[in-house]
Amino acid sequence: MAVNGTILIVEDEDSICDFIATSLRAQNYKTVEAKNAREGIALAASLCPDLILLDLGLPDMDGGEVIKSVRQWSMLPIIVISARSQEKEKVQALDMGADDYITKPFGVPELMARIRTAMRHGMIAVGGRPAAQVFRVGDLMLDFEKRLVKLGGTEIHLTQVEYKIVAFLARNAGKVMTYDAVISHVWGPYMDDNNRILRVNMANIRRKIEKNPAEPRYIFTETGVGYRMAEEE
Amino acid sequence: MEKLRDLFAKIPRWLMEERPQKSYWGRKWEITWKNTLVTAAILAVATLVAWIYNRISESTVNIVMFYTVALIFIPRFTEGYVPGIAAAMISVVCVNYLFTYPYSRLDFTQEGYPVTFFCMMLIAVVVSAVTSYTKEQSRTLAAQEKQLREAEKEKLRANLLRAVSHDLRTPLTGIIGASSSYLENESRLSEEEKRNMVRHIGTDANWLLNMVENLLTVTRIRDGAINSVNKSMEAVEEVLSGAVGRVRKRVPQIQVTVRMPEDFIMIPMDAMLIEQVLVNLMENAHFHAHSAKPIELYTVNEAHFVRFSVRDYGTGIAPDRLETIFDGEALTDGGDPDSYRGMGIGLSICKTIIAAHGGRIEAKNCDQGAQISFWLPREETDQDVKAYS
Image (cartoon, rainbow over all chains, first blue to last red; front, side, top):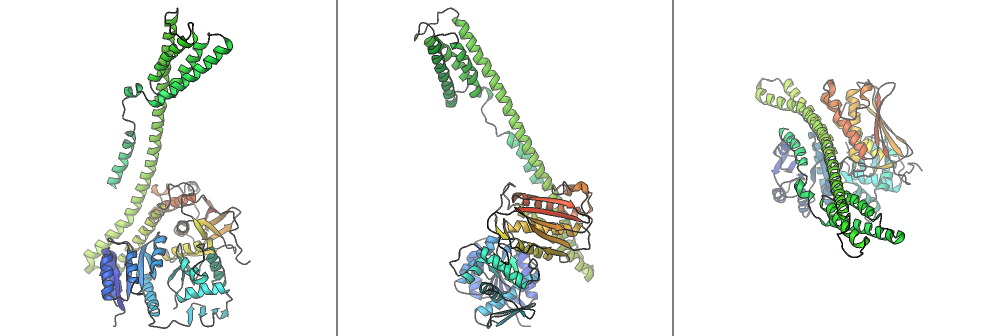
């Protein structure tokens, strides 16, 4: 069976590193392990892995340094492994250029899903595969060319801003988009930090596309961080 | 655990030692700037009053009285014996020099003078002794009270620690036992048995995670006082959906229906903490209500508050526990067969979180099942926009 790709794991805890590596190898990925940030940066540069799994709490340097260093020369996908309850840390890592994060502790299926998503987006980002014209998840369908949103066959009328938000999330489906990222994409970089206008719009979007806005199927809230669109099946 | 207990045992002793190191007698005969100034000021006032009185009434009868009053006041506002006795001497000299014939001259030969001198000295010493004794008493009382309060706090902390370590030990025993048994008997176990063991390890570990997350949330609260959390404006519906998402991930078989008003509303809160509260309440309802009907989670927008309610259709809460259910005491009684779930800690953490938001939490029994509600204050600004305006 062909190897799915090479993944660099930068993690200082042996037990966590072991379990990730074992599960990844079981899924036909090749794994390389680094125990600290310096080693991680060096291995990333010499091996050019397809993806980096990065723990933020490393013994020698902050994990953020690895993101910065790698981003100077490559757009290869980086998934940050972070502890719960530190939303600021997550947002910072995403702003620095990480593609996604996964919260400790996590299950193997969740990790695999994140890796597949990040790999797919990584390929689109480097032009290896064209972005799809149509996005489909559940009953929701988005046609980027016609700027059309359908739910179970009936067209949904979204305002300009609402469409922009949904399209942005759909283009990045499966990845968490920080409030700031969505705001600067939709309203431009000079919008102030107040994310209330985004929340209001999101509430309206949910009332249009979700059957029960309190239990969304399509757009999930990552508390304190941002929004994540469900993945295409 | 032993180490921790040692540490806690040390604290009260350390508290007792924090008193000033000066000896009792040393403090009694100390001369300080504060004492000197206070004494001088009170004597000056007495002299002034005496002088005014003397000018108005042309009489010297009550001059001594003014100084006597001053002598009573001085020990009250100073420390030790020195100011009182010094003031007594100064007063005698002042009376003699300023207010008795011959004026502006010292003359200790007058008749009855030793009596005045002796009486004033006596007043000074007695009053000094009495006041410094009462002061000493009240200081000891205050110290004792403080010690008692600290001891009470220690007791609470120790109770929580004991409960937590008890609750942590149970699943840990399961995990350690299962994993070592697996490693030792691997060849003799059937596939089915192996799967079961690993599944149990998973369940126990998940339970531990829940406990640790609950305890971690407490570290986000400063001091447990009101408004001691980092609040930001959060959309209520997003917090609800976040909480439901988290509880579904942990307990996939849980049945929850969510209802909320159409109005979009944002209120100030620490969303992570409120999600934790909702997760705790929903899990509590799931594991304790023993009901077939789904749990209901809903919010009501009230004038100054938003009410969040978790309602189940199960067996309800024992009436005698309604009052104390949030106090974390349920976890030590041991009689509860569900105590393994350790919800006592979960619920007391809920109360802490809600109190830190300036809200309140309440449990009650309905016709069928129980309902736990909490209220969070909403800011009275034009924050509320109709979702469909």
